[in-house]
Amino acid sequence: LNNRSADPALAEAGKQKFGMLCAACHQADGTGNQLVGAPNLTNGVWLYGGSEADIAHTLRVGRNGMMPVQSSLLSEDKIHILTAYVYGLSNTQGN
Image 1 (cartoon, rainbow, N blue to C red):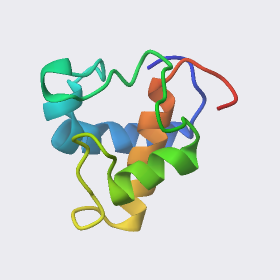
Image 2 (cartoon, helix red, strand yellow):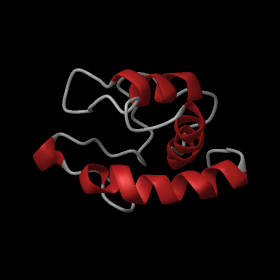
Image 3 (cartoon, rainbow, N blue to C red):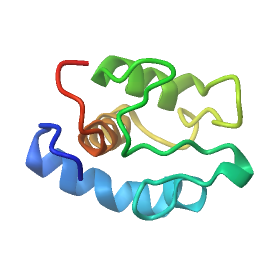
Image 4 (spheres, rainbow, N blue to C red):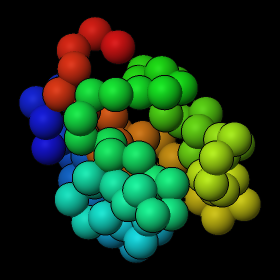
């Protein structure tokens, strides 16, 4: 969504997972919901790092705020697909 390169097929598959699992807090467009502590994923601000490895780690183990652990809900393949989509939301390059 923000000019960050990601595997197009993985990003498209991740978009569907994002809509089912993440959009409730991060909004369908990824702009977040500050009322529930869900950050904007499209503005290039990455509190815990914006690399694919950092995003996958967030999905696997959660974060200090309100981001719940997702590894009990998502397989490693689904985490990989969702990571590609979220990674593609940022407009920063080289993170």
